Image (tube, rainbow, N blue to C red):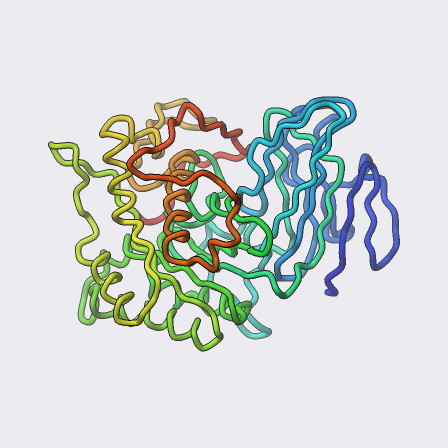
Length: 409
């Protein structure tokens, strides 16, 4: 399929290739026949403050998305996410008759590696928006308003940052789960596209075995980056040849060597701490020698390291034993539709927690990767010892929820 620009503007949608015109107000439900349309949930009525989704069928690659947010008829407060709830625009306010144009880059992929091979995804991933043939945008917020959407192929100069990891990194599709990998796109400005390949339950070796690394490598080019955060699930593997300084090192070395072979920059990220406090209010180390092994490998291979293990220790201890629950999936029964029991998960984050972890990663990028940090938006510096007040974090839930916890722990 040829990459073309799609424009959906104030009641009009045009494709540059076919020069056809459609009424967006009368746009169909998405189908493979049309290749575009409202998707996933019922199309909201005019003037409604309900969220909506819009999808465009495009080949694999990076896309420049430009949205003109605002309305002649009402004030707006708009959040824009893409694919599996990747955050790009957070609560942008517009006055009545005010319009603000924003541009960001979205990576779209499917499971096909080549004509003979595909990524071996898990059954729970089969409906995941990250793995289909369309680019999906979610417009949410207190009053989502959008005048136009433009989707066009990104320039080859755009840097792709590939994220590899487990459930603490993955784009979580459903509320109330979230991970830092789906929050970090909101921190980057022009010239960078985040491609989150992480998946719940993955270890470094199973990530490779499922073809996830091979798929990422098929899209990788010189100057890109690949972040690796593993350890949570790797530490559970037992048997001959297993261990932090054995099979784990071998797998991470494969990531590093393959990236460098393509002129890309490998980056190691130590695993996030679990919310496990001792009697003195200090975080217990629960990852055995896996974080230290990653530090050793980073020094040996001269690879930048973001020590998220230490930053999250500081973060959780600063939050405190009970208040730190507000960063994790801790909710009483009935907090979400279909929730028939209490949720009390000390590994996986809610959106606020995921956002705080993303801020930690951003600080690591500032310290370790100055060339990539050049593309960050001008936001306030973050000190994990002084976390944000969760009361100031405003998140409009996506329409979809799931009570089953992510794979891994």
